[in-house]
Image (cartoon, rainbow, N blue to C red; front, side, top):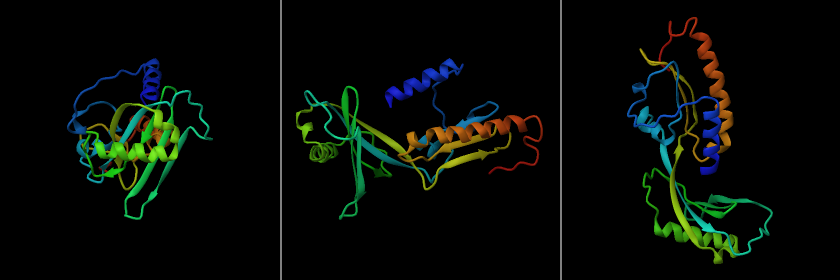
Length: 209
């Protein structure tokens, strides 16, 4: 993601997008003609959506095995599903240019961003069973992230009195990359509609959704 996001940011800059980073407690603090809310798991706080909850994910980055030549017919391997004890299995191996990304966890309702030793060891053990060559790999770093869990994706427009219309696009769970371009296409069409309405009946008769 660090490579992909840098690429997306450079493309946005080339189109004239400016970036500003600051802390926002409430979406109504923002001003503009249209506000697009893609705050992920933090929509729980920014727009007070209590249906949003974190799905914590821990991963381990390791070095590629020496003289590694991928003997497997995949670059990304994901194994998931229910276990006999009621827990969910989520093992994955991502072969990257300079390292291997190993996962993972799906801890619902967990906001903790500190890596856990027991989860690291479980990840390493499970991935080693899938790819024995990893026994020669060295740990580079660990990462923890929070997926934006929600019963359904929130994708729509909300009208708040005396404020710019807000387009919401969050709640993708662990499928953010998969759904990102489709979500962006829908949001783009909603923006076009709002810009058209602005010169007609933009707020007249509208109620908050």
